[in-house]
Image 1 (spheres, rainbow, N blue to C red):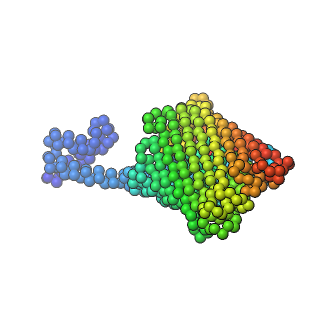
Image 2: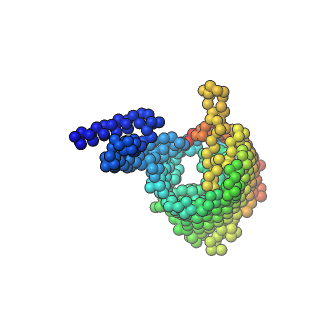
Image 3: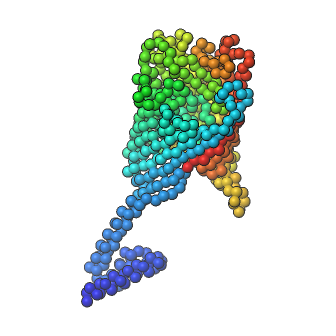
Length: 490
């Protein structure tokens, strides 16, 4: 009889559970139903405890299943995430399709052309809630680094936000513009300051966010950075002859964030990099050259002669970004100093100086016409994704939404007058340049968070090194370029 009674009670409870699941307002949970039956004397305390114990086991099993369950979603990428959020992996990619038009056309770099500027595909993720990883490949123009499509791959140990260790191939911590993803920069191309920054390299860095609004990073790298613009550049361990290494550090503060002002950005940053060459004192010129391309991605506005072995490269950078609501002023200063490492060896072929400097600065003013706020796109010392207040939707029934629009103007000055004609290689029909000025006017249409179109006009003037032979009369010292980009990323 007791067994029959218990089975009846279980059936009654089960029915109540099902009824309560169907009508949540009449029963908040299974536990409430059991407690109610005990209070009414339908269940004894022993029977209630037995059912509650079984219920607890079911809860634990359900909770464990929920934690290990993998859910897929789309948020700026295809994301797979465990229920407890300790494990996460996303598949990400970007395509930037460009068209460039130049006037006048004086060399091969100034050919009017369609181009796949970047085509990235990779995975990023987090394991155990504190181990981050990434592996990203660039399939544009064949390969990005050393006959390999691999662009960025690293592991980041993040036991605390204020102390993290990153190891692998990633960007050295220098230049706000360089560290901001190409998806989110102000114009189609970065400035000369970013070209002088080290860029991608192999090494390790200690970095973190000690307090909200403050960042730091200090790293030790091979020193060959992808932006050295050298034909000798090679990330393959079997081919690296550079025995010297690079120390690079950066620190930033966003004063507005410290003041908890969510409408403003008051970003200040400084960085320094000391990269030693291979200390070969043979005195012969190797194939390392310094090359800076116009901001329209056209002619080389500066190209050194072949540098000799045994030079050190010291880079100093200052950066600032000030924004209020939809207006932003952003600028950088960068100085690169090529210096003898023993005080007697000539720095470049044909020159007797102990060091050569390249200096550049730029300032850009941008305006989000449609009212979005720049502060919403700033995160941890760099700029991130701008999200339109209203995505463009040609099928909207409530009136047309046009996404976000941004207008921008940038001025850049490059000063390499420390380099005499004998230090330089010709870049256009025998002309050797050591100074440049550039104006960029741009318009950006962000139709949704993942899709945008950019339209830029870049007017660059080159100054020849002071020599009759360095400045042939037949060479036009200006370049006018139109750059158009269609971009999709996820």
